[in-house]
Length: 144
Image 1 (spheres, one colour):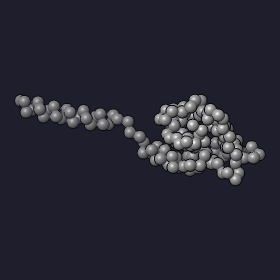
Image 2 (cartoon, helix red, strand yellow):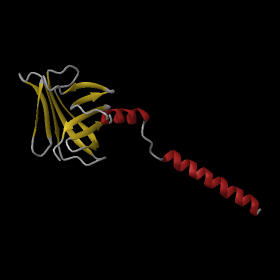
Image 3 (cartoon, rainbow, N blue to C red):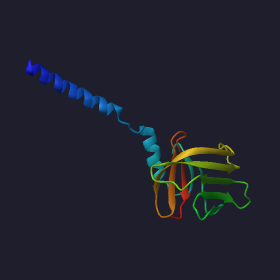
Image 4 (cartoon, rainbow, N blue to C red):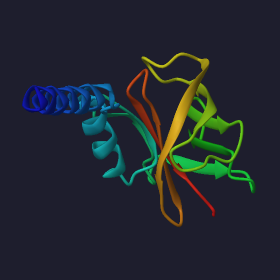
């Protein structure tokens, strides 16, 4: 009887361990790959599905930001092509914040919309943000 109880206890422990493993959150491999690709990008701009949607070109564009680093803009000289990204707060690593995108003259991008983004990395002057829902990444100039 003790032997049977011991086997049942071991089986229950194995089952419980398996259920805990299955209950743990695992990152979607496609999201993980998109984030890894984004962090490898060093050119400011917007990326979707591992492709550049609109990126900064020093020969064609100007950069602008504010002292609080909550606003970042890429535009051409005539200002008929603009990508402006505004954050509602200074982002913390791994935390969500709201980004408002204002675009002009960019095909495939709504004129104005907001998305929740997660700060996935930063260096001295670059900030990487990711919208998990739209699988869209943003690389911004960052002062801090």
